[in-house]
Image (cartoon, rainbow, N blue to C red; front, side, top):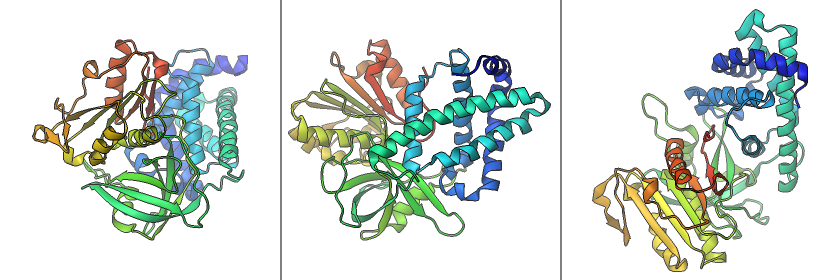
Length: 404
């Protein structure tokens, strides 16, 4: 809990911090990377280049301060802290790195706000930071213990590519087995692994997270990777391009244990899976798991994509419908020419899923995965239809959370 004196100072200075949040976090990253260039091997350079990371950090820090001072940021802090902790654990973040972050973040506040940052103000915001840091350190320590990871954050393990299968022009699936022949740990559909790759030139190591897209409990893992093509002047995705072009069967990748706080399968109720684009990957893991463990469970899959040709792993759905007799599939495609492929009818609606047309069983557990605007629209529609907030889980690729 924030001390009473610090709470008053933080409340008084919060508007200024919010107004200059992205300038502060932008300066923070610049300072930290100048002093510790090795940390560039952990942070997503793509999100740094687009500004997504600094925007997400600014919003999170300001909202946490508002939460501590009794404000109403509208952000549910338990899920947010769990999401951050799982992401940090998948990167191997350690408690020893938090003082580095804190030092440069507080220095950036002083540089941006200038004389307004008195010793009293600096001490109050330092207290905010360490309350947040201690909550995350504790959560991450528990995650490492459960995953059997040492306290030094040594999460990486070598995996060999046993198979590389092209799903669409821009999507490939990798079947992975432990390079040392050790047992394969299981996971919950909806969880992801970090993949660390060494890039050419001065680009160093980069890490990305990919959902485990196969069935848990077998002798291999599977990830399904969409190649990120740059638009509007943005560069192509460094890691996805590397995986598509440079990684072949027999090569080795470094993977973390499975992390991720969101389950895509719920706890036995009717299940509604709603996805868009590459967001279908956790849904496919859920369907494979249910086909093996709860084949009679009522499940609805609603998926949106540009076309049938871009819908990754679409050809697996007819077989899953045979194994899951109570599986209903609804597809929305932008391209009306793809009305029916592989025996599956596409409900073409301009590529937009209308939440009012989604089949909804009483008591259904919902899992969403896709672009944030897509999930916000679907979630808002389901809430209007009476689905309780606690029954709607969602997975965001990249920084940020759904709001409200």
